[in-house]
Length: 305
Image (tube, rainbow, N blue to C red; front, side, top):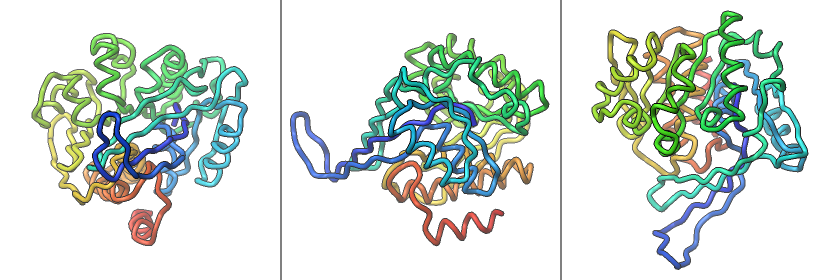
């Protein structure tokens, strides 16, 4: 995995927050960053995982290293004094839906010259998120890593990240910097798929994405509706595992990490999507992108290994 590690300042309200008003809720500091979340979930699902990113030479950077070590993710972290370790404000409303404001931390300043070439070239698979493509840097580093991995025979997957950021960048500009990288797997959610294709029906979104990313396996995350898998010929709907939404933070990342861990081992996208749906269902019933595993999750993960 290559991309962002950031600390989430998670704010969850127990009731609707009115303009100028006050309410009780929860305020938590939790590890996050889309790429780091995917790496952790892949590791939790039993796949040996490495993470490439950039952190500040500060206390949050030290905590980031400790977090990844605790999660058994091999970290290749570039440290800098010029920028602080990334942070994100995550607002979770009383319905469980989340909104984020991302700061420009050290993770946004990864340069191609800072890539651990041996680690990237020796990977069997490389996962990238769109957060590495919205600005440059770190776009050049992500594109260089994708070419390095592909040249060494690795497969590459991509999460289009944020529908709002794609809109602000412009769809054509966004696709100009990522669609030429020949991704093997694309893992958008429905909103991202709608923005990229102009379609609203999940099956038509998947068809449109196949035209944008020729040859890619499209795995469309549909939240309460489950997921859709499209291999270019066949479309399969995967039913949801729960509708008990507490906090949507990190649901897509947990799905991606679990899907990749299962698929890279089994080569069965349908079974991988079913497994990933169960993992992400557990996540949305808890607070934060990476809740501490309980007995139910450990049983689920053990059954996959």
